[in-house]
Length: 146
Image (tube, rainbow, N blue to C red; front, side, top):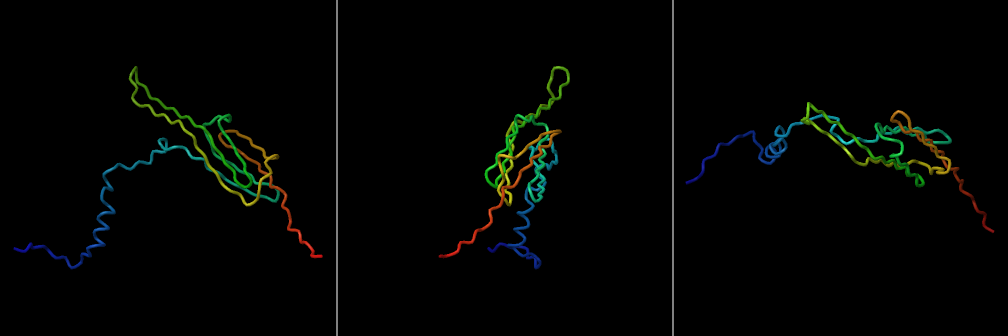
């Protein structure tokens, strides 16, 4: 005997299966925008003038001893060790404890090389300010043939 199946003239098999697979499990896991649970990130603003780059990096809640800046030519690397502890107690029972220990980092490349000897860093109110002077550009020298 042959199996009887219902035919749908508007169903395109490969396309409809792909759509079904796309939304499978979509509502199974709860979606959360809880920012406190996410690992912190370093957000930077970079400004440039004729002589130097100025970088402002948001690194809140970190001691300045735990921040490391490395300059290698045009590459600037920022890293910090973060600790975040939050504990809610009621009497003797701990109801909720959230801790985050880790290392965050950010690296980016600039257009010109940096003069590492004259670079300056200042950290206040959770914002790291870097002043990165540009190295003098060496102009191409034309050699005359004798």
